[in-house]
Length: 457
Image 1 (cartoon, rainbow, N blue to C red):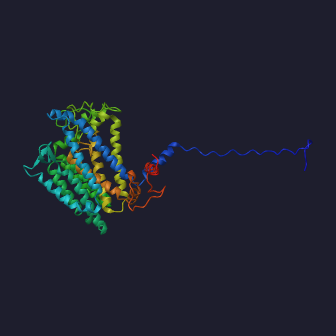
Image 2: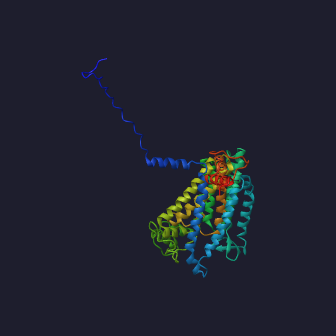
Image 3: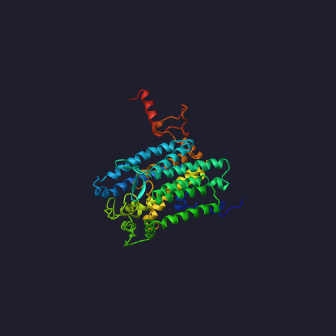
């Protein structure tokens, strides 16, 4: 072995190690997006969106009804909380209806379709009977229940049309009859025109537009051919033009689209213009809850059709965008329920309810923004009015029941741990670390009990 002059072996030359490859840093925005995507795709997302969104809209609506209706109530020599108490009572009853509808099986919903339709048609016909029906703001669409309580049967006609049409189309799809245009239109379109005729006898074109939107939504879900769809749409458009041309009031409302200043004459556009004033004076965060100026007699129907304008004035752009986001989430969840189910009745009913709520919200908000004519329809779950709130909350209960009935949602709900340490059915002791294991605090409590039984104090 060769050595150096000093007799020592030659030093071995160290080979430098390559630098360790660093793991690439993850983009926090991408990570956040991926987490949001995973949460968005969970089975219970639609269930929580429908339940949480509807409750938030109703709760915020109660607050805004109380704020927007105080001055109107005082001007009518009523207590300031008069309209709020009536709306709160309707919301309490509607919550019970929501819970009942959310727990009802699909077969029971289908069984109720025909009784609800018959009851709605009977009440809508009863409105036209002298001495029973009453007119409000020029529309003969109300029935007095005694005292200050009234009911508008046309609001229940929306729910009746959705349930009955969904059951009808589902039965025809099971028999493979929807490929024939006669079975697709009959008797769906004639019954819809019957409801529309009863509504138009009272002069309520806003509700008629909502029912027309529901009809077209159901035809689209049923796969109506383009020619058939366009034909029915053309007939409805012609009828709508005739109804608008023959009414000075409707022509005046149509002339107020985009108005920014009050005018003289029949189309003074007072309500539309002051709705824009309320939104413009709100700014980003609003003037503060209860600090609206337009509700002091300047803005008509501040707590009903134009409550969105008061919301913009008091809560600003942030408040109005929050309301829009809640309605968008509710609409997305309804579309998701309708798109993921294999039950035709659930698909048609969920699509009809989603079309109903979305179309009514768009028409109301569009009128407040000056983009659409004032149709006189309330903002769903938000505006004052028990007749509109009760069937809408029942319809929300339908969506909740359908969202819970999805196979993946049922499995996710079955896997949820019982609260407060309750055991599952079967009585078997859960294994530590399993899905059925008790919560940590319950385990600690059991250890403490075992320590006491061993003699420790």
